[in-house]
Image: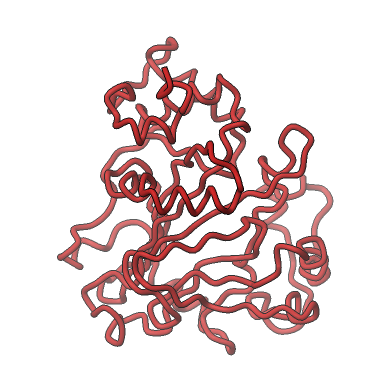
Length: 310
């Protein structure tokens, strides 16, 4: 689970932007100062409090998503452009996904609505590449999944959603799978690319189908410039503190010290045990990179409010 930071590029030198993903998730940013600055803004916290109608929240340790211009010479950029030149634009219908029925959805036997947010560092739109969503799709998840599945032939010899299962899927529908808009249009839904101003926060139900969309102008010439990131967004999540066990709250403190992510929709019980196995305070051999007790009160409150209250 360990990672080496920083992972990324020199902001003002596109010749360094050739490693890693062209349009990728910057996992190593989960504990950078700028992300914690954004998480602890009163307006961000109030937005999640309004969505949940609850006051006591803990923050996910999520990441950034970036899109590089073609000037970066990044192989991932070229490959993505080759695979996203569709008749309807650069939105890949197969990449649109939902987090419904992830590990948090039925916690403690009760239905739970999880919320996510994105904050762009610069204006993002179809030209720069942006987050795409399917409005109202969070209310029709089973229906969409059924329409999507009808055009795929799967091999029952492999466990559903296993690596082998994905590898042996065969497209039997019309046209190309990435252009299969029918799974939405037949339900009266229309996928769209968002247009969001820098610094604004968009909160949505994680059951909503969403994905990143490649830039209509991958050179950046009509956007922020050819030697500038096309898009960069903070991905943020918060959940009610009541959903965390005392052991999970402790593990979150240790994960902060080990520089590890804590995503809102992953198996937190499993992550908890992995973190406890690694941290030196619990007999592990992975060294901490920071001390939770020295974090600001605002950060402590969003990681483990029971510690901050002591």
